[in-house]
Image (cartoon, rainbow, N blue to C red; front, side, top):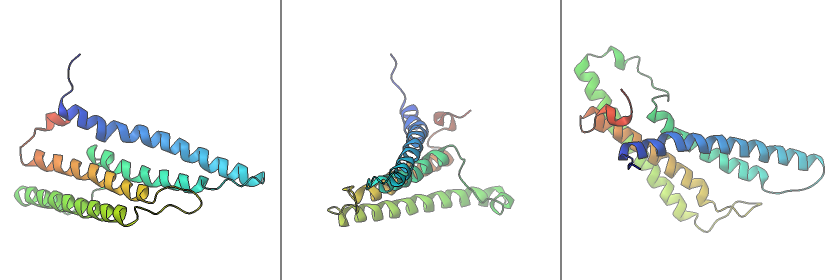
Length: 167
C-alpha cells in the first residue's frame, strides 16, 4: 500500500469530504424539518428540531466555501481584471490573494473570540453549545484560506499546478 502525497490528502480534505458532509447534512435537514412539521401537525411537541437543522445549515454553508474555491467554481468578478495588461494582472491577482488570506484570518480570529466569549452558552430550547455555531466559520474560512494560500504559492512558483491534481 503506497502512502498518499500531501497534496492528495489535502485534496481529499478540501474537495471530497465537504461534499459528502454536505449531502449528508442536506438529508439531515430535510429529515429534521419534515419531522418538525409532522410532529407539529399531530400535536406532539418536539423542541429543538429546527434549531438543529439551522446549525447543520450554517455548517453546510461554510464547509462548501473551501471546496468551491478549490475547484474555482465560486463567484469571481474579473471583467475589469481580464482587460488589464499581463504584468499588472499578475500583480493584481497576487495582491487579491494576499488580501483574501488576510480577510479569512480576520474572520477566523473573530470566530475564535466568539467561541471564547460564548463558551458557556447554549441555544434556547435545546442544549447545543453556542460555540458550535462559531466553529463553522472557523473551519470554513480555514479551508478557504488554505485554498487561497495554495493558489498564491502556485502563482509565486513555489508549488506546481500538477501537484494540485490539474493537468
